[in-house]
Length: 239
Image (cartoon, rainbow, N blue to C red; front, side, top):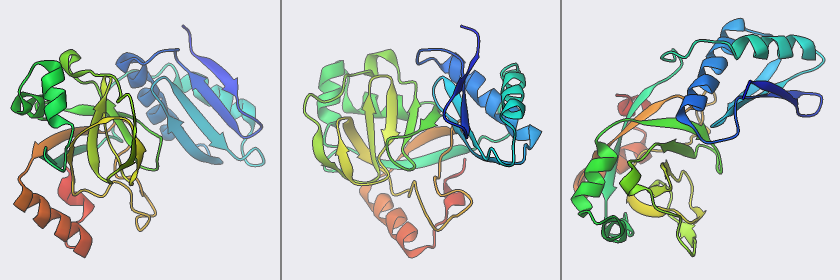
């Protein structure tokens, strides 16, 4: 499928690369995002990457639609390469027990040990494909095929904030307490959304990469206390 431009009212356009979840398509989305950012078009208010598309919100009184369209078509031809805008993160997670109540069931369903499930999640980098569902909620992937499970048949009414969960080919961290149907494997002390950081309230951004680091209860408690007290800042999680 060739890239196409879709109109979203008078102040937004979507550059669509395909119709499926595909890491290769997502890489093209990120390349287009970076190319558009380099153009420095005055009047763009927001750029929203997804698995397969890039939506640009702009002020039509400051920026002509044809200019945005031409910019997107040029950006669509950008070469896929390592993004200069991406950040690598190392996120501590305490696994199992009350922090990850589904770990044992996931191990049983996959025919692996709990340690093997944890090792698989921590073995390599996961890519942030998009932010959605909640402010700061990252969709991470892709998981090994053997670890890909359907969502819970009955969602929970309340998933604790900072829970690490998996469903299908993706992992995610819930920034807020909310309903959710993913399998809960652990919890992180890291705060994924902070309105106090006006420049970047969401810690993770599309194109970033994440590795998980298993920690024990004591270290989790120490890190959580440091985050709450403000003595551990966001830079602590950069790899």
